[in-house]
Length: 350
Image (cartoon, rainbow, N blue to C red):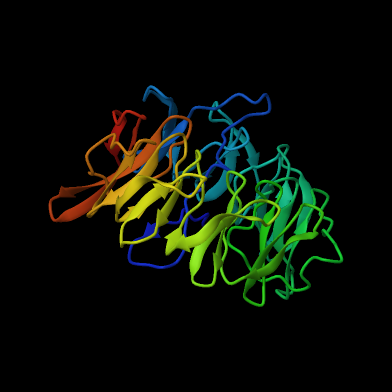
């Protein structure tokens, strides 16, 4: 299964990374109502709980994921399917792999090729790509059937063509549009295009991040700074490594091996003290202190003591956390959910 990465900022690395995960997990249905259901594992089967920790879809799946665009992808009897908020199978097919719905379409793989289906399960774009990613701003990043190139398509499957679009774009992991800009890479230089395929920020940066909160991190010489959607530098290059903005703050490391957070003026508002960090989402950021994770609020206060082996970003008010429990001679990973105050809504199970 293709993995949608949640990147971690390591204090031991000079590489830029971030944790901006809100694009494909809104959980909204066709009426823009939030589906507040969360996948949980119980006795090695997956089901869903509500925000109060009550089971709403009985554990029955081999695998289950967050709702996105009103539907959730699950694995059942070795097949990939989509369910609705009642737990009913609404789309089934001979899919090798499937991805979350976003903007009404989902990438699916059949017979080795990727295409896009709508919520009725019909192909809106027939399988003809070697790789395909989620739609954003009515655009999706794909790879040609002969592996030779990457490009963007619209929802009819038409290639986005422009005289200024790079002729042979390289693969970019963070390829979705944000703030009507997409990060592109050609010959190891990064820049940005708009939804029409026009190059709006020249490909001149040796490293760069996608836009978030209307700013993008770019590397100039050997330091990181930020630019706006016009390409103007708004935070001067001064950081060893940085992450994406979320809720008005961004992870940054300027003068130590620890990470803190800066505001949009480039001022440090949470001191450098964390070994690894995630970007802020829903007013909380995951931080690693020593060997364990917790979350902080925008003032830098911890909502729990560092105690988790892994954490995921908050999603509709809850965050998935992982702990390791010794059972006999084995160390077992168990997954639970906490609220924004750090209280367990679902105690870790497996």
